[in-house]
Amino acid sequence: MARAAPVTSPTPRPAPLADRSEAVLSRLQLLVTRKLDGLLQGDYAGLLPGPGSEAGESREYRPGDDVRRMDWPVTARTTTPHVRRTVADRELETWLALDLSASLDFGTGQWLKREVVVAAAAAITHLTVRGGNRIGAVIGTGGGGASAPARRWRGGPPPSGPGVLTRLPARSGRKEAQGLLRAVAGTAIQPGRGDLGALIEMLNRPPRRRGVAVVVSDFLAPPEQWARPMRKLRVRHDVLAIEVVDPRELELPDVGVLPVVDPESGELHEVQTADPRLRQRYAEAATAQRATIAAALRGAGAAHLRLRTDRDWLLDMVRFVAAQRHARTRGTTR
Image (cartoon, rainbow, N blue to C red):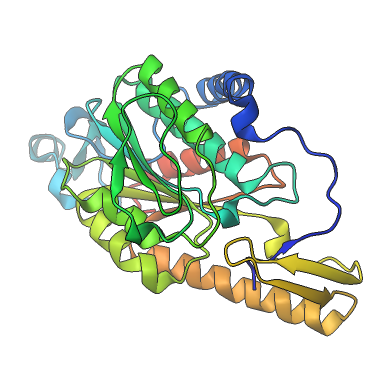
């Protein structure tokens, strides 16, 4: 239902991202650097600022604080409960799981969904490498990724083909990060359904040191396919799920008979959008679908960020980071 993409005469769009990746990535890097460096000042800023292990200052205990961080010497001296604030570790490893299945090659807003995926990857990469940390990625295209073995990227254009799961090894440094983003932007979207569960499972095997795992997808695959791998991922890592949404996946416009096609299966249908009851049922079903996705992510213990193709995705990311940092300082969970 929500996968269907209108096949009306679209407004002229710029060339595909892969054809203009260098210019787009250069502008993207400048935009991300200016916005995030200007609004997220501090010793260390990340999408999921964790408690870390380096000792920091003490502050009074607040309800919800982790009792394992009690500062007993200060508590004894002041007779008031205090907790020790800690600084996030700089030697961290971040892994991206980027879903580039056929359903991401769609958008009716300012961006295509796949462009939002690349933009989110650029922002996360910037927040990671500026602290000297390592970042790697696994990329899934369409075609039923579970049926094909994962391939390791060794520079140059990443392999592409039905069901390809590509692993980009974790490296530090801005030059390596730019190479990773070029590989992501140059990945060709393949027809057919992808396997989001298999993509996330690539972050579980082989086991890695504790770090941050970021899954970027529209999460339109059934939750039973990817919820269990997400729960396993949360056991060892801080997990952030970035859900990419287009407004036409949430509601239908009143434009008469609208041909729609499922980009993953190729099925074509004609929908009479002039029917208000049909539009209402569509909106209700879409709302229920997104609520199910949110519940599955919450059950997996993942932080949830929703980015839309018709909104300022970077501003939404900044607000998310600010909210995460505020929740941490108040001792509450996300």
